[in-house]
Structure formats: C-alpha cells, structure tokens
Length: 233
Image 1 (cartoon, helix red, strand yellow):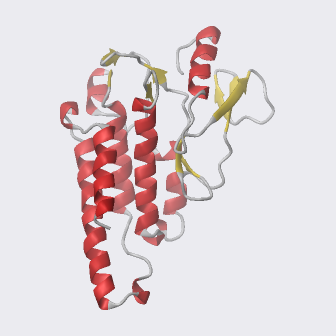
Image 2: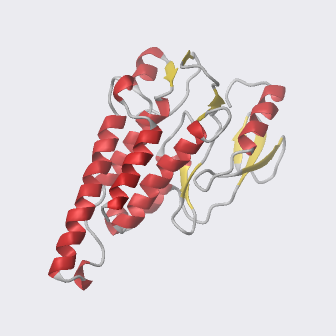
C-alpha cells in the first residue's frame, strides 16, 4: 500500500482485511510499534495468518526441488495460485491488484495449499483499466513489459507474473511419483493424461508472458482451462 498517508493506509488495510479465501493469506491487523515484526510498512506492523511451511519456491527448490513433488501436488499449487488471483480480481466488490506476484509472496500451509501473501503493494483500482505510476512497484523479472517500459499498470499486470511463476515451477519438474507401483497399462494412461495437463500448464504460462498484454488470458479463463483438464483424469 505504497504512497498512502495514515488515514488512507488504515482505510485500504480494512478493505484488504476483509479478504477471505483459502488461497489468500488472511490479514489480522496492524500496529505502529511491535517487538515481533511480521510484515513492516512505513513503521507499521502488519500481522498476518501464520503459515506452516516455507516460502513456495524455497520449499519446492530445496532438496530434490520440484522434481521431488508429485505432479498432483504441483498442479494443486499452480491451480491454487490461480484461484487466489481469481478471487482478488473477481470475487470482491472492488478488484484487488497484487502488483508484486512472485514466489517469495506465495506461502504454503501444512496441506501444501498455496496462499498469496504480502499485500504491501496492493491497490484497489476500481474500474480503472490502466494507471501510470512514477513510484517503483513489483519485482524485476515478474513485472510486465508495459510497466518496465512505460510504468503502466494494467489489468494484465499480475497475469504476467503468474506466467513467470508457473513457468519456473514447471521447469523444475522431472519425474512422476509412484511409477514403480504401476502396471504398464496404468502407467501408460497416467503418463498420457498428466502429460496433457503438463502441456496445458506450460501453454498457459507462455500465454501469460505474452509481450502484448491484450494477448494474455484472463485469470478466469485460466482457471476454467485448468478445470477442463481435470475432466480428463
């Protein structure tokens, strides 16, 4: 919530505190002083829902990394991130724009459910389609070209970062689990089905990273496409 005075900060924080979704970290409150800082913004401490595991990429990349994750778990993480973003965009009276979607801002609970976190840069843009800013936002590598080149914030800002995250998650996946316990027939069907789902996830990631923002999909269409792949399983 960059660039807000105390009154504006409290008003916008109250809006963000109403967020209730399994894929969004719940904000509990804030104070001006605290000995145990959870998330700090301009001298204020934001207290958030406690997570049980590490940051998304810190988790999937330690040890055996993404290759150690069952595809179903990895898919659950990908879909959960998308559903959290869909809720912010379409599940509220006024859409919330994260504006700093990156692995470090995605937490996993003890059930491997991803939750979008760190709304320090989030803004409520209302019905605006675009907005220009001179204040730096986002993180390099996850910000779209229109922002990097022209400091333009659009409705497809977060979609670009989503694509980068999915691509990085997919790039680390190398194997399926439980292969040793499958018959040849079951294994063949398993690979065919999940390979198609993997391919679609990669296609989604690439579309999200299109330089032309008009060519990027909406988060609703992404979630719908993912759900269509589940019918095949």
